[in-house]
Structure formats: structure tokens, C-alpha cells
Image 1 (spheres, one colour):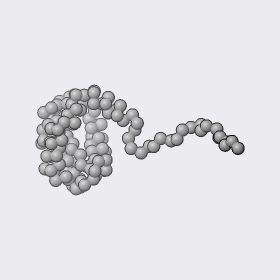
Image 2 (image 1 turned 180 degrees about the vertical axis):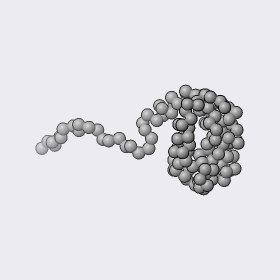
Image 3 (image 1 turned 45 degrees about the vertical axis):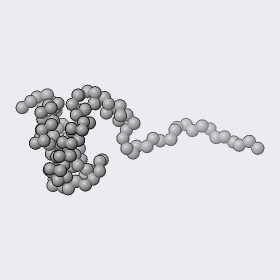
Image 4 (image 1 turned 90 degrees about the vertical axis):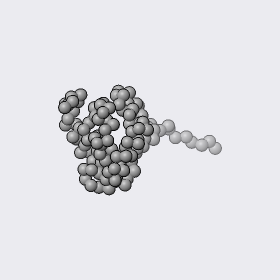
Length: 126
């Protein structure tokens, strides 16, 4: 006897919403190509400087005092932040005194809010 076949599904299986968006590599590449300074974050020089800052600050958030022990993307993972936005200035980007250790949570909320408020200053140097 022949096996009965059902109709083909009308919709495919749902995509997973966990992790990053499918277009993230494209968006990331577009962001990187838009500003030459974005490539600085991928250099060995940056990784070494970042590590110096983390050690200097004892892996402690300079805004909250929280010891940071998480691994990216955990909210308590350490992030190195530019205190004064560099806006493409190599001098400010590489200045260790312009860098601080903060938690990813602080960086992605409080610091991003501060930067959004100052967007009208883009390209303006004090």
C-alpha cells in the first residue's frame, strides 16, 4: 500500500532569535568601512593597551566599583571605554589616560546615553 503524503508546509521552520542578527556581519562590515579608526580596535596594539588598562584598573568598573568577572557578552564583562570620545583622533584614541574600565552594562546603557546626548557635538573639538 502506498504511503500517504501530506500537503507541503505553508511556512518554514521559525528562525532562532537567540544570538546576533543574520545581517550583523554585513552591518559590522559597513560600519568598519565607514570610518578608518574602527580598524584600530582590531590591532595588536589596541589589545595590548586594553589589557594594560584592565590590569591598571584591577578589572574593576570605574563608575560603579563592581569587580568584573564576566565573559563577553555578560553584563559584568569588562569593557574599556574612552572617557572623552576620540571621534577619530589618534591622540585621544591611544591615550591611556583617556581610557577607563567599565562593565558592559554601564557601557551599553549609561555611557551610550551620554554619547547620544552629545551627538550634536560630533566633529567639534573643545
